[in-house]
Image 1 (cartoon, rainbow, N blue to C red):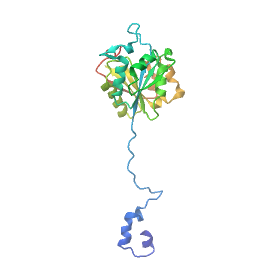
Image 2: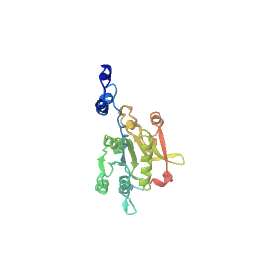
Image 3: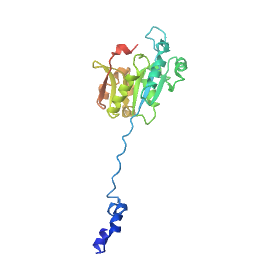
Image 4: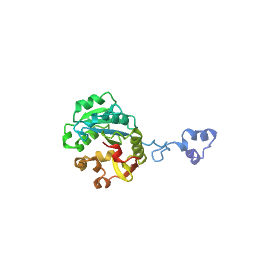
Length: 231
């Protein structure tokens, strides 16, 4: 239309109507047409259940195989994780692995073995995290000896993580005291050069001063103390 006007040529209804299929509305590289906003990336959380330890605090026997309401403890914890909003579940086994596997192998859980479980919890944590799918935004770390942590508690942590944009460390608290479980954002466990996973003798130290320097911590207040949920 502009070309016709500049050339003193008549502009009629046909040319004006053509504006709707080209003309001034034609997209060019320097003036792209508006696009629909991209949908927000989905934030998925994967669960890592640590079930590799010797579990002897109950007096010699493996407490993960002790029955609660007629169900082995490790199976009860796995069932609650699978009922949560976690997208996937990795179970790390070590001590008495065959007995643990026999207890949970019919569940929709990926079972991985940590041959170095005797070196401590950190080695099991690394094995579990290494086996998470690449599209997982964060890992909720669940200890298998917590019979009173319920699905609703896990979902609370996951919701907090999603609300925080999937970039924060989220952990359970009670009256301001830190506890477990905890959710770690992917960029922390993708940072292999930091080596921070080699320096975690206890899960209670995950949110250390080192981590707080690179990640915001979000508290998810539970109605029960850590003494109520641990064995």
